[in-house]
Length: 418
Image 1 (cartoon, one colour):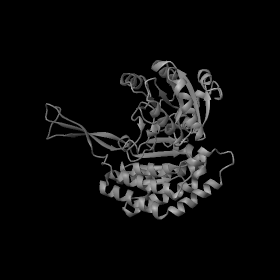
Image 2 (tube, helix red, strand yellow; image 1 turned 60 degrees about the vertical axis):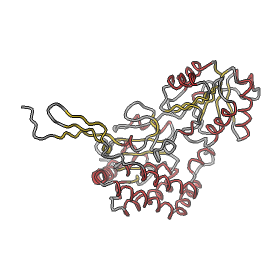
Image 3 (tube, one colour; image 1 turned 45 degrees about the horizontal axis):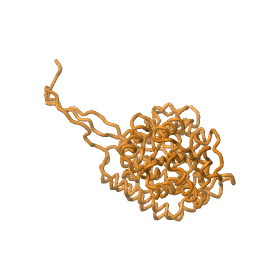
Image 4 (spheres, helix red, strand yellow; image 1 turned 135 degrees about the vertical axis):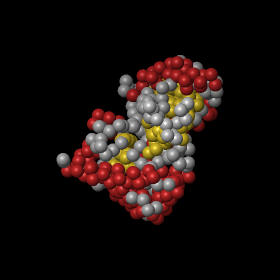
């Protein structure tokens, strides 16, 4: 057994034992751990921000402003993490829910009951707050979790993990319910992906390279999403002021998150009157553009889009623009270039909106709202552990319910099959 495999076995053995106890802990105990961890985050806010400043200082000069924003923690963001833990604690208990119940003619009563998944491996990049969100959702749903933050956020991840351990300890729970890989050594990630006997689910949250590596190497089931190559389609029936307001938020509120709009599709009928205003709005906030030929004929200052631009998740202040002829052409464009993450339509015509929503294959679709609402907190999940774009087990923001599976309980009074 390699050194990395031996380290992982030690972690997964502890996690498996902790998960068995956590799964039986009552809701009050799990909530106590979350509320105590929230207080620990607040009490250690200065130390967490200082650790984050170490991470930021170690970044290479070529890191983008959007990347730095994803990595940065401020007192306000630490407070948001703490509030997120408290919000998760207030949510209904996902465990023990009776999902279905029926009785057979022989008198046997069958129940399908929600139970934890077990041990989760969470691999994430650059956004250290993901560690707190993931730990909170796992604790509440009765799952142990092994965290692996990006090497560039290691100090931040460790400081946040320490607060989660304080919360577990205060509630009398095993600190091994939430563990963190001891270093950024990539061989440890490989060992985690191979730990089929110790880990029940791997969730990667990061860039395309990370997700592809996890899907390629994992011997453990993976709950993953592709790029957040999201589109906002402005139909000819759209309210122009609404379209401008929504586009500005969808692209520029936070450009480095997976829910940001990366491509604007706008109807040919409305583009001459509306597109110049949208471009001006976004440019005033620092956005740059890549546009197709028709869009450039309307706004001559727009730079041309290359063949690859419509397949690019920018995660930055860059917007691709294409002019389309109606909803079907918009849907065709999304089918060719999208990543099945999040799409939005701005339209006053409800039939067109329905055609768009029924025609897209993405995990989340919105009508007259910003794509940046693709977020577990905005869905009322308290937080999210990731966005799933596959078709097995979970789709869209992954919250408490999606971190459970089920068992069957059969209640009898002496029945036999003789």
